[in-house]
Length: 277
Image (cartoon, rainbow, N blue to C red; front, side, top):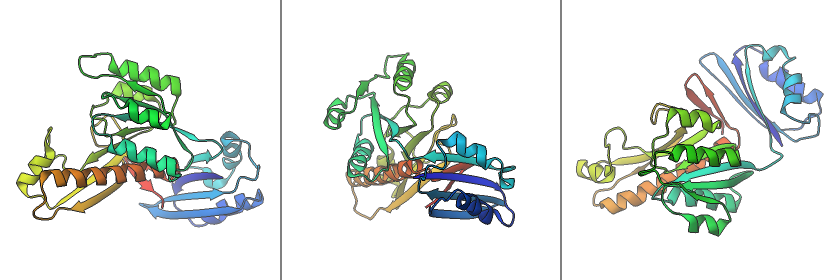
């Protein structure tokens, strides 16, 4: 299978031009989704790989000859190999376990975890699924980012997921990682900052809690949002119950966000994310 996402200034005839282009190359379209936001046309098309193009460069060369390509941005992906995913984790492994389970069940298309990095030892989890684990402590270790970047360079992942990794990434790290990084965090920010957000939320009687997954940018937790969800808090719930609900919401949102990214259903434009179904 092959897919592309494309966006350009909106005008009549874009869908017809793109469909005709694929038809000329005898491509069988499997899915097509399009919409317009703020006079910008966004589309995602996937089709059976019939050998018309050997790789993304060959497709892009033909595509750029189309009139519609002027002023547009194209991203093409061939689903001809598993996509490599590196995962970072800290003390709580719930998001990590969810992703590993989803991959084992086949719910994350063409995904393969190439390594796990933790500042807490989760080597037993990694060993169960046959994935290399690297323990890189961040306390009293000023070179931890350099050590992590060496691991990333060795495995060259397509994406990195921060599965509740509790350490702020530096701008240099984000730049040198050279691939999209997806994060997950609870919805209590910025109201309840610190080590005990659930306790503070409990004291304030919060009635809703949730989680947000987003692409990582240098500004902390300000990256384009991929996926969000909320859960209600009922009277009588304990702090431990809140934490349990929080873990369930976080792991679900994180896995859903990774699924969208791995299926190439996200487009970042003008500081926000357009997400296809």
